[in-house]
Length: 135
Image (cartoon, rainbow, N blue to C red; front, side):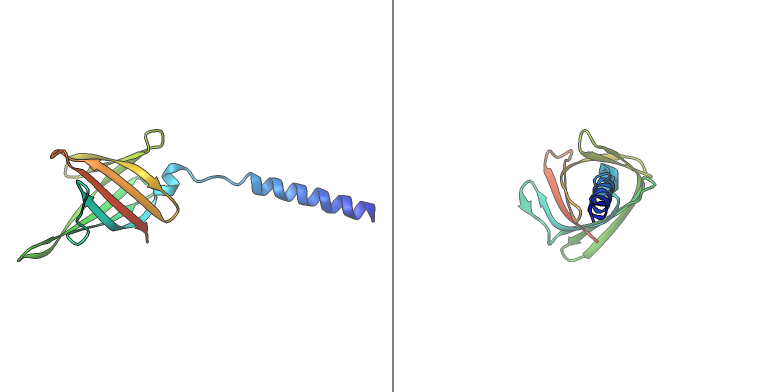
């Protein structure tokens, strides 16, 4: 009986060590996926009804971004951007390099399994904040 209890205890200890060694997701692993904007603010003003973003970050460091905007009297306009991206875990940001030229770096201020908040200050000195939900 003592041997059975000791064997069970040894097995449980060994099994728990495998669980403890589970690899944590890297910053890149957390970013990869499909993200849909749920809230967009410009200079603190909610413009979610006017702007929407769909961001797809590939594990191969390629991205596709659909930026939708509602223009009065015209309707919805969608611009699609593609290119490469790189993450900086220390700075907690991602840089998007567009195929047609240009580069934008977004600060990631919040990142969970299902939500991400990204911010950038554009040339007009306005802070853009986009909250995303993983799709």
